[in-house]
Length: 561
Image 1 (cartoon, rainbow, N blue to C red):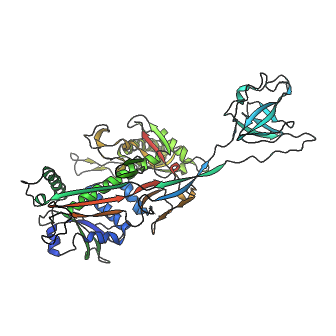
Image 2: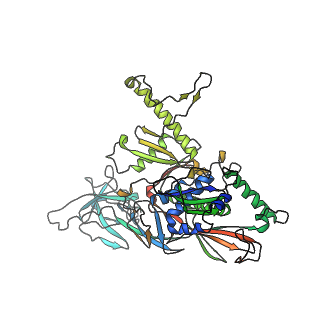
Image 3: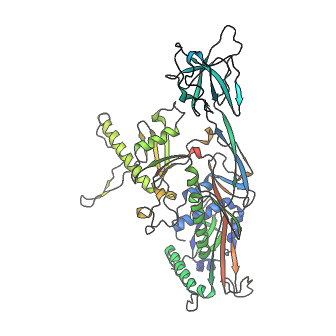
């Protein structure tokens, strides 16, 4: 095995070994990998993700978080649906919903009544205005009835003024002007009192989520290619084999020089670090490459896929929207050029995050951002300047003692010194709070973003590498965004407190298998053939999507395109 065994979920170990060693020791055959997966699809799917990310340097931190947190919802099959209710706040306040500005050339003069159409009814004697400081005030007349006009109400009002020649401004009777009730007035014989003003009006929107994102990968190799007899192999087989060999060479060899062309999944003996050979499940490198490609595509789609529906000869295909497109409907703060994130942008995010929480003083606030590499380095620069400024200001109070836990300068002689990096990842910024930054590689990479690809930024990083994201701007404990989910179930042991979920069909959502031709690398006789060609096909497919239940809990600072 190339690397030290890794413990996944307490007992699963994954690694590479050589096919020669597998045959010599007599460990399990290739097909047993499927039975291992069936034991616990959710847990063991996470084991496969760990295998591929560790062995192939494919970074999928957000993808793995679903399984670590148990944020997995299951629906009734492919294209299964569930509904969920999200509260919405209707526009607060009362507005004019009709234009009565042309009723008179001298509105309100000498106590004249004039009409105003408002979105909710008021009572005779109510005092209304459009500006509590400088606006004119009107009183709903007791001599007229408030009339229903469609979804609005027509009121007859009089101008409140000490001068008979004062007039009400006509432009304040146009549509879309907000009015406020500031009081009420009664006469000796008045009978109607004011009503209770309605508070902020809330309601719910019921939405439906339909699972799509069915994806698949397959490969085929001929007997000639498998035997490395390229003289008669098809050109595409030769090319595939060359790529396959280069991938395998990157994995290295075992202690005897045998190529690490088999991957295995196993459990540890209880209380030890040695492998229980009876639990070993083996897969060949060809399957490894197909499964790796499938999971890379799944990871990309969960993050970057744009939603869509495609109709063609093979039926309707549904593409679910990726996480980044969903969360960008939350709070979006943009900056103009690479390296342009400033304290002001972070302060804007804090203002959104802590709106309505005035009781939390700035020094008590805590903000945590996930960052792509370019944004991470940008914020490191902000942190460094903050630390230097604050430490310098505190110099009279803290003396000349070294503040770092140890010296960043290393070396045994003055001519061979090394300066290790000094990085602050959590800093208290005045007027903002305690800001923490964490690098998230999944923001750096999407398909076709190598350094030779046109249309992306330098050094091979994607545009989203310049983004700062607050993945959850409110603890679920204090959020009432999700009032009901119908048609989906959380997996056993899963969490109901998350805001982002991995959605899959009930049971398995990930399948793989073979289509044998008139050749098999496993045996020479009794081959069950489904193809006339001399070769074997390996395929894998999966169905999954990502769902954000409350986009308002996300804040993104991103570079303008």
